[in-house]
Image (spheres, rainbow, N blue to C red):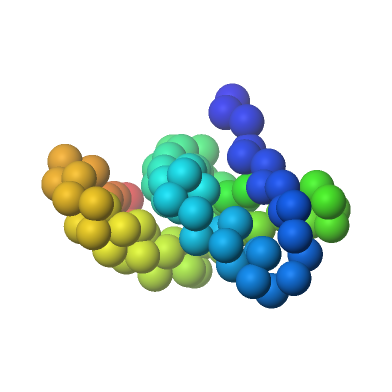
Length: 102
């Protein structure tokens, strides 16, 4: 079982939080985790995936199954932006599997 990423905020201002969440390394980590978590959840028939923990405020960010396609479309946009077309193919396949009820 993979470990859920933990996001640590140094600055609790809105600007500090946004800078952390939009940092390239954090974005890469989060988008990768959305994809792998949803892919794994489909196999295990889970209804929700946890994307990351924010232990400083004792909370987790999760995505319910009803929003997986929407989340994967955001993942797809990220991979198009960074020109990782092999991941685009994998994300598109996962979206199709969900939409087809697999």
